[in-house]
Every structure is written in C-alpha cells, then in structure tokens.
Length: 490
Image (tube, rainbow, N blue to C red; front, side):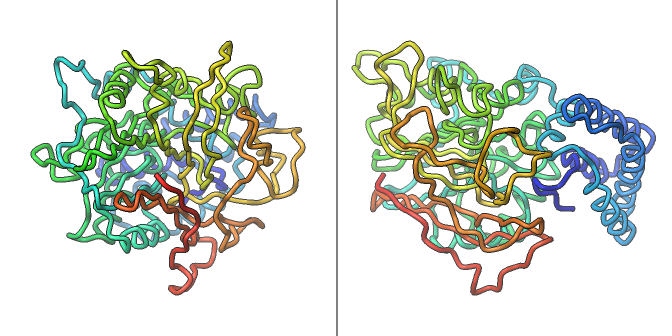
C-alpha cells in the first residue's frame, strides 16, 4: 500500500500493523483495541481542530479492516490482502485527518513518547573527548579525487526511488550520504523493505558505502530500526566503514573536506517545528569543526531554514527573532571557537538538509538573524535537498487542509517568493525541479533530486529525475534519465 502526503489515513498505523504481520505475531483482539484507540485519539484531535464532526463509524470500519488485512498478510493470503487494500484506499479518501497530523498523533500514541524516552532507549551519546576521542568518526576516508552522492528523504522503497538510485550510481560515487527518513516509522521491517532491499536491487555487490542520519520518521519507532541498520550497513562494527552512531564524521584522505552528519530526529519528537541537537552531540560537532582546517559540509535532516514548514513555533517564521532559521541550530554554532576570532558558522562551508520534499538553493553568504545582536553570523551556503523519493505536490491549496488558513497566496503556490536581501524571509528566487507528472488530484509532482559532490573539481552538482506514483503514469525509460539542475563551487 502506498501512502503519499495527499492520502488521508494514518500511515504510521498501517506501518505498525504491517510490522506485526511480518513477524507473524498478530494478536487480533489486542491489536484491534490499539487500532481503535489510536483512531479515536486522532478523531478527538481532529474534532477539536477542524470541527469536522464525529466519524466513529468510519473509524470502526477501518480498524476492523486493518486487522483483517494484517491477518491476511500474516497468513500469506495475498489475494485477500489486495482486496482489503483496495477497500482501505477507498475508505482513506473519506477520512478527514491528514497525513501529517495522523503520523504525529498516532506516532506519539503508539510508539516513541518523548525525546528523553528515545535517548534512553537507542540513542548513542558521545561520552566526551577524553574518554572516546574517535567516537562516531568513520575510520576510512573518501578519496580527495572521488565523488560523494547526497540523497534526502529517500527511504520509500518505491520504483521511482530505485530509478533515482540508478541515476546516482551512474556517477560512480565513492560513498552515498543519506539525509534521513525511512518511511513510515523506521520499523525494522520497513528498514529492510524501503532501504536495504532497494540498495541490493539497484547496486548489487557493487554498492558503495552509505552513511545515513535519522529523520523524524525513524524516531516514530524510537530509532529501533535505524540503530539496527547502521550496525550492519557497511559490514558491521569490524569494518572501517562502520557507522557507530546516528551522527558521523567522514573526511577526505587529502584533508580538504569533512562531512558531518547530525541527528536532528531525536529532538524532533518533542519539538517538531525547531528540533535541537543533543547537547553532547553539539559538543562533538564543535570539536570536529574546530579541529579541522579544510572545508566542512554539515548535514541535518531538519531545516536550517524553513520555507513551507512551521519554524520556531511560527507558521511564517519568527518576525521578532530568528526569522526562518532554526533557533536551536543557530545558537549551537553561533559561538566563538576558543582561541580564535571565528564562530563555528564561519567554518561551515555548506549546510545540506531535507525534511521538505523538494530542492531549493538559498542565496550564498546569507545573514542569520540573532535577537539582540548587531553582529549576525553568516551562512556561506545552504541547500534544501529533501526530494529524492517522497513526492512534493504542486497544486492550488485546499482550504480544508491549508496549513496557513486565511493567508493570501497565488493559485497553485505554497511558497511566495520574497526578497533575498531580507534574512528573515525565504529566498527571492526559488529554483525548483520541473514537474513531469500530474499527482492524480489535479496538481503536479515535482521531480526527484540528488547531489553529486566532485571533490577533485571542488564542485557540487544537482540533478533531477522524474517522479511518479501508483496513481500517475510511469514515464518511459528514455524520460527517466536525469537532467542537470544547478551547480556551485564547494
């Protein structure tokens, strides 16, 4: 079953049921109670938020059908499972709670309750420089004349994700870096189905090492599947490509570049609009930035600058403070490096992030607003790169699900260009991929994107590949080829 953001059902709930079926451990009555309770929680939330009235009868019908579907999967009855799946898709269209709200409500109800819970359960914290000096630092190094591929929000396991990975592999990257999100909840079975299996299908035995950071989806299950993944992904703990933690440092063998991946998913559990990094991790990143003389590419799943997501608790940025910048990220790296006149931001040459499912390059040397300060730091270059497999829909806002009700905007636009001179606003020119397909709902789907960082040339290049879903036409093979989108010097 495919659930893209336009589908009105709790995808996380479906993932939970699917996981139970895959491990053949379905207790129908207990699971039915959990499903009913979760849907009831969503109903209460949506009733208060949208005043859509009661839909208890629909909840009851869906909960029973979900259990029957799970049992059919567990028993290997694919024909029945497919029939039930078709019926669920029909019911989903009638359900008035949105994808985003459903995963938030159902995730908290059924899985990870808090950042503290996740930290105590699976997260691996740095114990301090004197105790573990090389913790989370990848032993191997990428060639200074090699290529590094970057993909974001890629873990759907869908055919168009495979197509993008084939386009990535055509560049023969020495390593692949993933900016996070394996859908829908980062459960172990989903990690296998949506991440490992596609890598095996496309790359076979020729797969390069891949390092990944968790997004919000991996932490819907407290990070269980993610931490199991990194322990086996590149040959296990005995491999020099082993990734020890949910954050990492990878350096080039000529000392010119380092790639720092950060875990923003952990803090997202409690603060979805502006997650903070764990303080021990902030200290770890600062140490690696201060101790390196080459260029630093910093990576988070969540946005440093938000353009279509709530940031710092404000739907349209913080007018009296940090603007469209994540205040926790800014505070973490707007500190002076000891014994220097530089801040940590001064040594971050490129910041890449995902979470929003499209591609936007921000104007270089962008001032970062800091409340109460006249000496603002500068972001040398920042890129949103979250459109590698999860589609972004481009269509006229639906007033029923418009995240910013009452705000005037042009038809078919979710972002309004603003002056690039205003550090509190999104960029003046939005460079986005093309739309090859319709989305099946009267709008369009943006093409998927990825990046290739050529270390020998000192250049980052960005490419687009067509996207499609079960409801939209699959482009012919000659239309699936990647196209160059944009590039800049590192």
